[in-house]
Length: 112
Image (cartoon, rainbow, N blue to C red; front, side, top):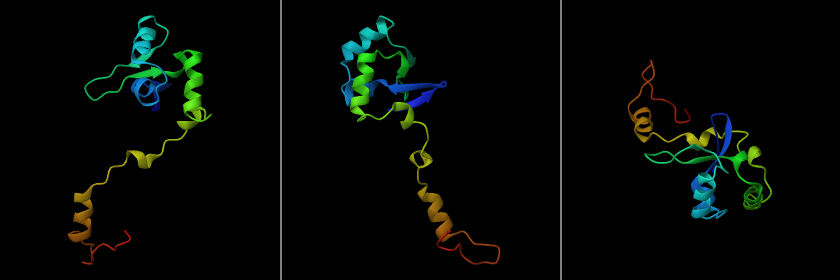
């Protein structure tokens, strides 16, 4: 939903017009066409379209704050929760649980 891209706070475009219904897709495209909003990253091939938060008109910023229940978007991305980016590796877990041995021949303790 919100992330920093090129040191700029950005909003995922799809969130604006599909998820939170802040604006319609037609309105989104019209604002981009008229240079009323700045798109920093275009979508496609696994990428998500990102719009600079500061370039969004104030009438939509107020709707965004409403959708966030009064929270500031800058505070939401102030700290990155690293756990959100970690994906479990079940093959590695199985290897260290069943096959890996310490130098003395013992199995790796369960808590490790």
